[in-house]
Image (cartoon, rainbow, N blue to C red; front, side, top):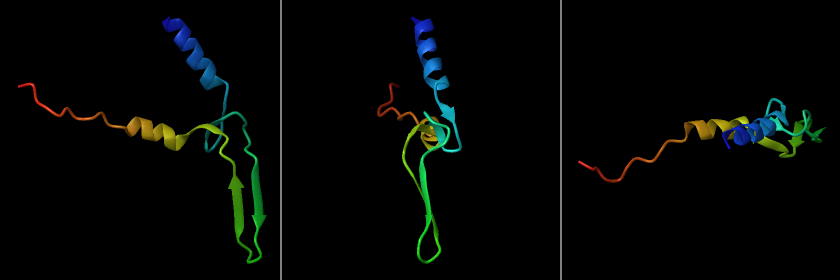
Length: 72
C-alpha cells in the first residue's frame, strides 16, 4: 500500500515541468505580452500551474491549531 502511494506521488510530481512560477504541465506558459498606448509593458499569463511556489510555502507555514482545553 505504501509502495503504491509513493509510486503515484512520484509520478505526479515528476510529470510536470518546473518553471519560475511553480510546477506546471508545460515549461513555457502562454503569455500575452504587449505595450499599451502610453508605453507601459503588460504581461498577462494564464493560470496553468499545477502548484505554485506560493501555495507550497503556505502549506509549509500552516500552523496546527492549539488545543482549546488543557487536560491537566
